[in-house]
Image (cartoon, rainbow, N blue to C red; front, side, top):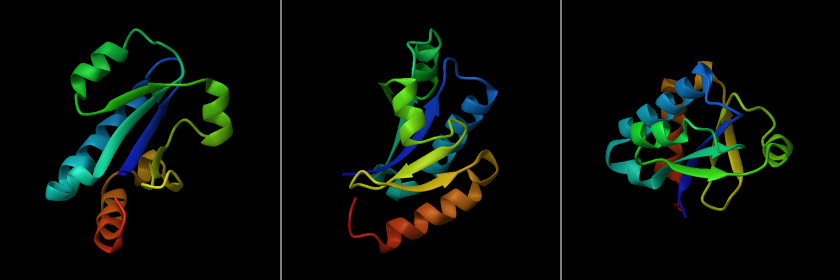
Length: 117
């Protein structure tokens, strides 16, 4: 029932993954009172040892494990942030270059006009 920012992770969370997690959190915080309508999800394909440190660094983020095959067939590129609507549809995709202010602007607009989530 919430909008979800999905950050897929490969075998390890490299610098690109860490930057995407950071940008997702910054956008979520910048939403202010609307931030409770947007959830963050780290989608991991392996039980990487660094998951525990990522959970400590991003305590309000959910971590879910799945297979790399499911991630690649469903989402395609691992180096993006995906916005899923409350109905479970992948709604928008953001590269690292667009995952800051442009993403924030889009999400604010969506939350303003949305009757769901």
